[in-house]
Length: 470
Image (cartoon, rainbow, N blue to C red; front, side):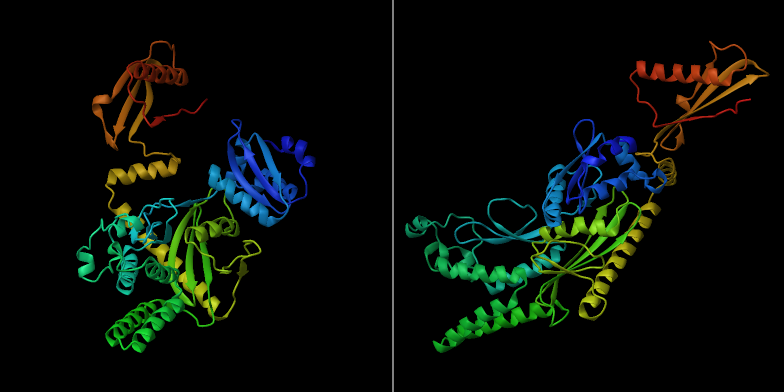
């Protein structure tokens, strides 16, 4: 879409909040954006070409027309933008790169729910907690849950009819005290569900409610003079305290908070996320964002923060970051300059610095492991901005003897090594006199006409020794 074409429609674009979409000739969405003022925002794409980034010029060149939707508030625009991006995944919108296979802890949607960890999320009404980036972390949490609240691990259908009819018998897990026997009615559904509720609290990082529950059970056992059971509950309380102590307690004054910081490079941005619950750091992760249009850091954060919060099931009412992002009226965004929240920002930035240094070291190690041929081809690919390394290269040159007997040669490289069996020598047939341009045209045509006729693959890179016109 040209500047002139935009000027023809600019008067039809209102000064209102909304969502705009750049569309190509096939009615495919190329880019989705939101704006407080649609006309002002879209006008930024069609100014002086010299002031635009290369990627923005490519976007406007490939777009055939613009669609927009007017909304009531900027909050509505944010929600609609996220919906469009998730649904259509436009080519030029930033994308959250996710090559990891995350672990989750799931509370199964069934009678007497099982609790286990998985890498697959199935939309069957079950409740998933995570994602956890460390399998070791999942194991620690899962072991604590298992010791505190014994649950069934079998996959039997524990319906009321099956239990009453005695169709399921006690297994070894009951006898080694890993399960309390709901399959034979030795544990009621109400008691079992109380344990599930406490497990939910632990997985959300809410330890106070769980401690109250265990304390209540311990006191009731003591009143009944069941001191052995009371002692067992006391040991569970100590186990929970030990687990909680291993979480990083950041502040007694901070409750639930999400912390986001960002570092940008030319092609990617990296966002570190800290999840704080009841003043304790319970999750941390660094995610990579692929930039498409030289987006500013604030634009990347505006896109990424809602996605990350949804992924981690965060409902924290407050977000601390370094840019004035807008996340809706329900979420307070703070830009801390001092105090405990500022220390969390600095902690997040340290995590980012460490992550990037690790990335660079791994990249350096990867390059050092490359063979000399791989390094040459990858350097050539980067310098020429090719999509793939040129494993098959062909080079042409002309020659003549004082303007007579014109010939040409083709040398071939495969995997960065000369492939002499593929070398070719040509006698010029259709050109009279010393005409290097016409001779090269004939040779190149003959070479690739024959390759196509024989169904052979074309080279990825062709190099022609050019001559200066006189």
